[in-house]
Image (cartoon, rainbow, N blue to C red; front, side):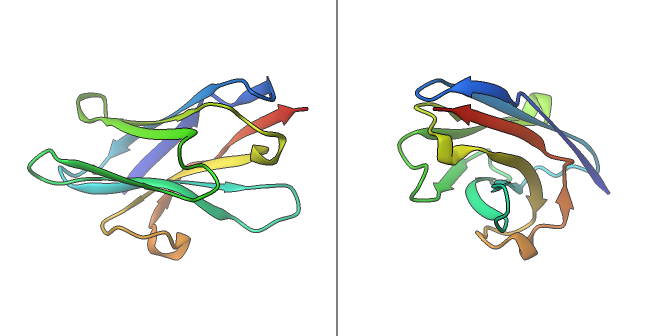
Length: 125
């Protein structure tokens, strides 16, 4: 079992920044994929970004086109924490943001086995 806890959400004006954190505990692995997804109001959950850490310590990330260049995903393996730095936020970024854990790279939420409870991000215009 892997437990995930998100934090860092809140209310911010358009153009502002937030950093989300996802702390993992339980059965963590030296190699993993951690993803961020979001669910806007009255919409389906959508992929935001993932980061893959290999057993050799190499990180690789990928992003949805809608956030590429504005969001940055990173990991701190010593802290078992993954971050999502969100800059130049737009009202359409308003959503509940979830982190999730998988053993393989994927943009599909069904490929993620463990999920956090979510954190609300609201961007005002």
